[in-house]
Image 1 (cartoon, chains in turn green, blue):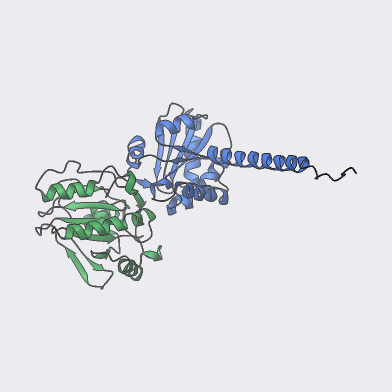
Image 2 (image 1 turned 135 degrees about the vertical axis):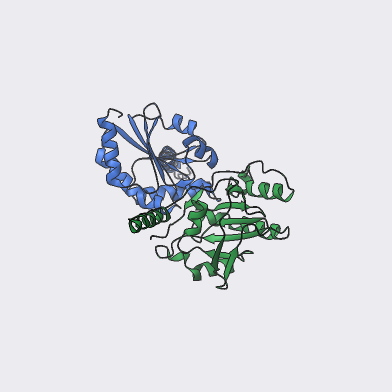
Length: 199
Length: 183
């Protein structure tokens, strides 16, 4: 009987883990930590929520034109906010078996040629994207020093600089750095669907 | 002495050139009209409904872009489903979100038309030029494309599918909706 219960629980866990996209982390939820391999130097980089640092976890990838349209913007933000003590983690959760552009060597090539100022990490089995409930690239989560999600959604409401009306990510970071409430804590991220690793 | 020399009359040449120019203008005009009609620009959902009014009891609406891999992959299947009904009960319409990317709009539109021609997509498509988050709110979708909806004549959503469609499932859904009298 006990074995059956354990088997059932294991199957249930497997079912939950293998489902494509989970619910997006709520504002106020504890952010999951991770330790993922960095494409550039092959070393593991760990994100430990609650480490006292304001952090941005951004799900992005190599092949999505919409994510690439935000690449320059993200690089600028990574550089300017690093000076204010904000840590950026770029996470690639796309399946690199189905999509060869998403392999570590190709990620390394992209991060190097575009001079990413933050680690570009491989989430090989898409587990971290599932844990955050990320759906698309780019999709960002801002985590405060206590490890709590304070913003989720898009970087800006438009990839075209001239059409931009809501710079939600910078607004959230500026508010949190000033120890103020984030006015718009949740927006709808838009982009290419994450190409889930097939289990 | 009578000077018999006359310059050749320019009239026939001018007439011929006028005719040629006229034909060229008609051709350019018709091409432009066809292009505009095939890929009319819509700034929001209200304009979309006005410029592309629903004529059939059921409307299948597909939101897509040429830069979206699963969108491009499913497009021929959508055309096949449309072909399999070929009735006035169901109409297919696509909303291209190619304008989401920076760059020249005319080039984006040319790419969309070239894609539609290349894949022999015959159902109507429009080109969305408005804010993405507004469309996401209006259609209540999270931000992943492709996303496909079926609406009744009153604009009520009857079905939706996030991600690539399953052709057979979609045929079943449309048949069921027609049987139930929704279409």
